[in-house]
Image (cartoon, rainbow, N blue to C red):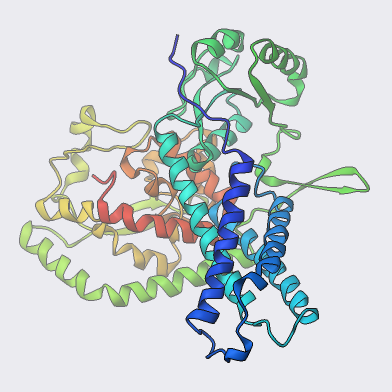
Length: 477
């Protein structure tokens, strides 16, 4: 039997309440120090000096308002998937609300003596202290999960579109704390691994697998017509005392394309338009043109030095041109600094036995075709600088899926082709999650997740995560 990892059910809500209440009062005391002891905002006349004990009822009022607001914002519900930015937004909302109430209280109670600046200082410090506390909590939780503590071990039933939707959300959001031990499916054609997700056989093996793999949760993603089988699986999970959850396929529509509404309690199901079109597409294109144009100017001198180094290191052209597949399957010419010896493409067939990648990709950690300068360029991703020109031309984007070769696309399964719905990018979720160490199926799962969940904040997050990935050369070869 597989060893059961250490787990915790979640941080106790009362602990969060105590920590938040303590930090709110500390923030209020800091605000008092800033206004009266450091005299930020001007020197306080001795006649208007107010001892801190006079402010204690207002500190208590602010604490209660904030904690109640946090409760209604769902900050103590332990929602998986809530980002740090979501929490900061909720903290700012609550701090604003409490400041308005406090200002109203000041207006009706001793208005001549109490400082009007103190509530604003308190709000700023509350956002700062609670924001840092949430960041620290996320860091601690991440470290514990790396050690197997607090990780929810999940078994997925079904490997169709809904099953892959769950997989790509888990791959793209490791902070959720899920570990998929594998999936089961009665379809004989689905009995092969999908990236890191292992095919564990038919659904009949579920009771045995739950025990052997120490499963915490079973997620059922079967089509609606298998409702009897779904009910039987739920009963099995109850018998094994394992939590079960069902992903409704909503007539086999992708969950990312569905939105729910209601009229007086009557649910309405609608189909959403893809997020990356219309004004969103225009916004992304403007950002691409602005950033790529700026980068081509800034890194121009560096690119000249790289070109000189390539010329001195090995014979052949400075730039490497290759046909790639863009959005919608359109072909374009991709530009890179040459990092291999001339004629390297013709040697792929001879090196196929050394391929370290799965699927249609070819990757080789110690590729003999790479030049001395090329190895440095690849390690720091400097060989990709000319692709800013592709971005400027509209053939690529700053953020998007890895640009594929036509020979790779020819080997795609149907679900892989969804990654071609958006323009390829200089960086993407695949790069910030391990680059060359990510399997082909996982790369596709992350690319499809990006296409479905695009937002300016997601792009900004990927760009920021790319910086340390490039600097430390993680997964690059």
